[in-house]
Image (cartoon, rainbow, N blue to C red; front, side, top):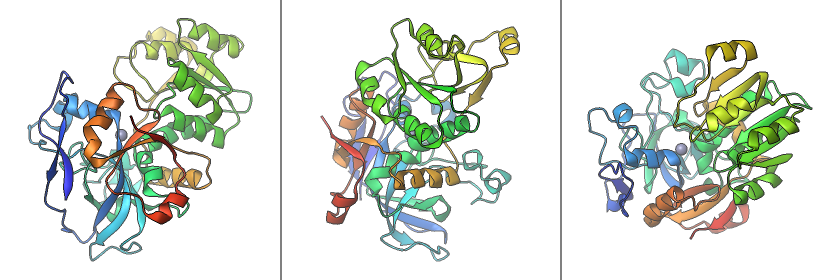
Length: 372
Ligand code: ZN
């Protein structure tokens, strides 16, 4: 099969070619619970850029054995083959793949509690295992599969398996306490932000304030559910304060996490409110005495659980959440990665190895944007 293979890290991110298209052996069923999926689409994620950069090398590849590696952890497609213990799934079924492969096949305490992201010895395709979705076929486990509702195609949903799931989980956490009349700030309306806005809109009646540095991204995001848009121009904290009667918002969701967004986000958080950190890059700095006086919560967020991915599929099935997606062929993996790095991707980018089935053309719901 064809796959796009990463052979060496590029800490400077200056190379034109990061991955190379190669012919590699097809994956094979080894365990009775294994499933081979024909990739319908594989999301190209900012995390993949960090993989190329080697930023996670000390965590994901301490022994220097990961490369060569096929990236791609946001995968959806059609079942090609199943192991002898697999029930309820058959060849041809459309599925989305939860990105965390449990090291215990689901028998550890975290998995039993449904906390897939904290599974013992958990791994992610294309991140700390060599096989990922930038390819025609991928092996996974039956416990990672969710059937895609038949109103949707793999291309409509692939980036939901990580980016969308992360946005959904954090929005869900915020909707657990946000009441009508209260406020939720979302910092960053790009790949994750545009999904979180729709999830919030679908699940609660709080006012949504979108804080964004790009005028174009803000314009694109507002119709998805924004009540107010605030451009980052140096006065953004004051603007949010004005919109929240001087108090700040009950929930602030920070999709950026770098270049000063953490202090900005904390300054927008109301006393007793919650600041949710999703994007990463800088340290969060706050005096302990300020934490005590303000009684603010700082909450970390890591992807989401299998059942939350199921819930997100239900929102997508009801057409309450749609992805903006820029489509690339598998052979255009380098182009897609550079476009993402150069902020030329609106919404999410995905590699699509096969041309659409005729029937899928009528089903597809994602808001498609032509690449380039
Ligand atoms: Zn991702």
